[in-house]
Image (cartoon, rainbow, N blue to C red; front, side):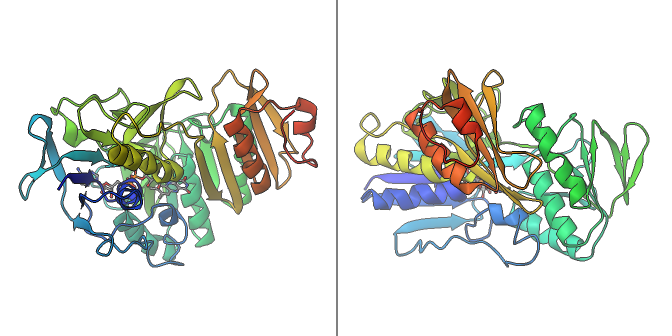
Length: 397
Ligand code: FAD
C-alpha cells in the first residue's frame, strides 16, 4: 500500500487528507500534528473563541471513518528525503508521498519572549490564555495594526477593555493596503474607542507597562503581539528542500517542492501565480482550503497529470463591526478605483491593471466581492465610470 504522510494538522493538512479520500486515494493517509488538540479552525480564535462565545472551533471531520490515521502531539523534527523518512522524537515515519502543511508561526516581539502578560494569538492555547484577560477587562496594548491587531482590538473593546494599538508604520495594514485605503480604515479604531498610535515603536515591555521609543509609558495589563507570521519551516533545515528568503517552502504550479514526492501547501508554501506573474505566499484560510484539492488530485493522478494551482486569493476580516473582504492580488503600480463613498459604512475599492480587474476590497459589500471575484477570475475589463457607481452591479465592460 502506498503511504501518504501529511505533516501539520491545521486546515491545509486536514483538507489534504479529506481531499485524498474524496479523490479516491486507496493507500494509507497519516496526519501528524504537533499540537495536542483535535484539529481546529483558526479564524474563530480572534473572534468568537476569544470572546467566549464559542468554546472551540474543532473541524467536523470523522477521521476514523475516512481511514485517516491522525497522530496528535507528534512533531516532525527533520526530513531525510533520500530514504523517504520523516524524523520525529518517537521514531522515523516512512512515506511514499509527503505533504508539508506546517503553517506559520507568529513573529515574536524582540525582548518580550517569555515575559508574563505578553501574548501571541496563533493557537487555541493562545486564545484560551487570552480569554480571561479580556474577560477581566485589563488594559490591553496590541502591538501591530494588521489583521490580527484589528481583530484583537475589536474583541477587547467588545469585552470592555481599554485598548491601545501601537503600530511602527505610518499606517494600518501597511503590508496589505496602500496609504490612501489604509487612511479610510484607521478611523475605525477611534470610533470603537480604541487608541491607535501610528509611527510608534515599542522599546521595552515591563511588568504592567509597555514603554515606547519616545519614553511614553502605556499601562498594560496584557500585551498582544500581532506583528506577522512566518512559515513554520525551521524543522526542514538541512533536508535540502528549497526554502525562499521568506522561509516558505518553494513549490511549483502543482504545489510540488524541490524534493521528489514532496508537496507543500497552505501558510508554509509559496507558489508561482501565472495569473499575477509573481510568486505568492498567501496566509489566508481560503488558500489552505483550495490548495489541498490541487495537491490531492496530483497525488492521485500522478505528479504531471493533475491540475495546476492558480487561484484568485480570497480572505475576510471582521473588525470594528465591519465585514471586510478582499479578492485577488494587487501591486503598487495597479490603478486604484473607488466604488462608493469611503466615509460611509459600505464601499469598495477596485484595482485595475491595463483596464482589467485584478483585485477588489469590499467593506460591507459582499455582493461586490462575489461579483468582483468572478470578474477577476475571467480577467474582465471594467468600464471605469460604471464601476465607480456603487448603485449599479459590477460587470464586465
Ligand atoms: P496552520 O493553521 O498554521 O496549521 C499548521 C499546523 O501544523 C499547526 O497546527 C502546527 O501546530 C502544525 N505544525 C507545525 N510544525 C509542525 C511540525 N514540525 N510537525 C507537526 N506539526 C506541525 N484567514 C482568513 O482568511 N480570514 C480570517 O478571518 C482569519 N483569521 C485568523 C485569525 C487568527 C487568530 C489566525 C491565527 C489566523 C487567521 N486566518 C484568517 C489565517 C488562517 O487561519 C490561516 O491561513 C490557516 O490557518 C492556514 O492553515 P495551515 O494549515 O496552512 O496552517
